Length: 191
Image (tube, rainbow, N blue to C red):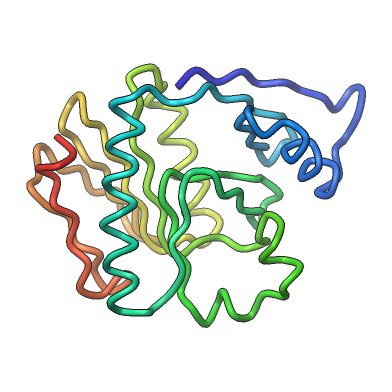
């Protein structure tokens, strides 16, 4: 996915509410905002990536319906991270107790919370370094587990809070470990 970065600071510094309203008034555009306050405009994903995102998200939804341990979110959901960035991972999950601690107003807009788990699925036009930086930002904001999946190279990077990056070449499945107890993602549907 191609990303355009706009530095608005010399002209305007968007408040959280203004950023939320900008997103609401332009629903056909996917916006993110980095910790520096720069506006990131992303193109839609292609058919193959969108289909794989949907399939992956379905696996998380089915697991979560069975376990009732938290809430699953798709790539349309924006999260206000503690560092001030507003990010939209392809898949996110938040433990139920943490979600329940938010007010109804916080849940309705871009929740001011870092997910417990995030997944980014590389699109053919994604810049690997930028997505890796995004994954590192998630970890710096206390996300416990993150997966960066590159279908083209069949490579998975596993990010864990406070631990070294693990890289897997052509894995067949991924475990949710203690963050997503009992969850296994079968990668045969992805690769």
